[in-house]
Length: 71
Image (cartoon, rainbow, N blue to C red; front, side, top):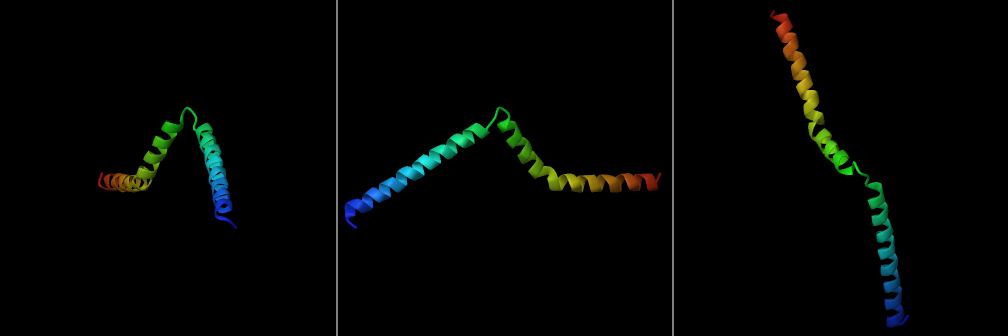
């Protein structure tokens, strides 16, 4: 295979990859709706508070049980 044939195959692959990337980016853009930013922010808050929320709820239940017991 000549050097020029190898370069042509390489440039075809690059062009194909670029076209696939462009199609993917258009698909991603279409998937982002009006509420995408809000949904992302809520997801980050949910991830950050999920473990802490359970801990705080358990501590609150223990506190309420202790207050009820010593009343």
